Length: 135
Image (tube, rainbow, N blue to C red):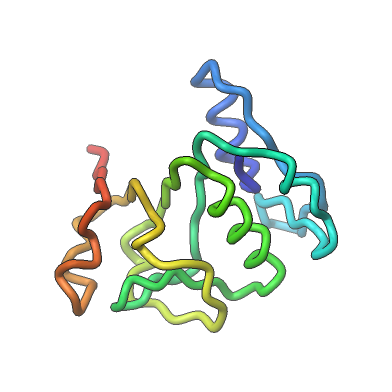
């Protein structure tokens, strides 16, 4: 499951997986599908993997977002997923945003471009999280 059009396209072209993309709308220059708050269609599913992102990840490992419309959908997807993969560029760490999505304790895999450990005040934030840094 994903709300990101780029992730959905890449997965559909590079894997044999069936990708569930939520219905909703796409904003100008935003590669994500945003759903309305009353769209409960995602409650009918249990997902193998949820790919999520965030606008910011603070020093405590809280994943944050600027847009409140994205929060409830992502929280529901996390709840209904067997595995959560967070994809975040290095510049996401240390940024601040007002809306809480989740914390690193709910993430199984972190895919990023640099070692994230120096960004956290607690060395245990990444315990249980598989960190992947592609070459």
